[in-house]
View 1: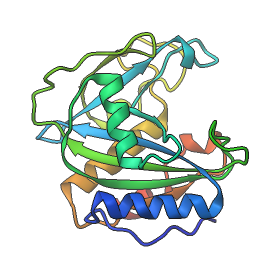
View 2: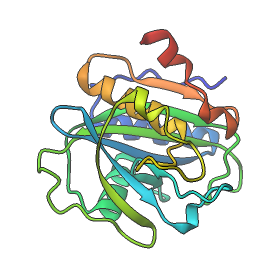
View 3: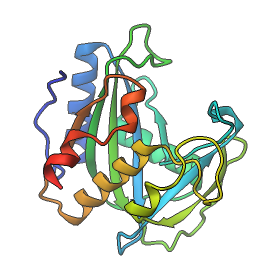
Length: 213
């Protein structure tokens, strides 16, 4: 199992970025960065609908949180904000902090010849009333703030197509959104850490959510 460095959601972004870079460099892993941006009430979150390039085997184009690969030499927090701007047009959110680290030892990054990836999940709040928000086709077909109801979201198809406006919604995005919401509600909480053993394991609720909430 992956041994993560000790980290708090109260760490500065510079501290978080430095720890992530040191960790991934030691393992020769790539990095990914995603961000969950909520409204001030923390009951709506920004989602993006991916384009045809991300179509799953059942014909659906998934919804997910903004984010993507961290470029070589780029800081994870900078990558998350860059992807946020590129995919949604949204400017700098407030209350930005680290919410979780995820290890994917099996994952093959486009920036590394060897497998392994560290994902940094950030959380923040949009106080601009979604000013300037817009999708970025063809990569992003749609984007918007949606009410976060975990019981409802868990009923949304994870693959293919469905009648729900957020179909398909892969399960890990639901769990990651819940983690980010918890860190924003309770800033003193420890950062979530979890290792995924395979792509299939990402549909299973992470152990930290089972034990802490």
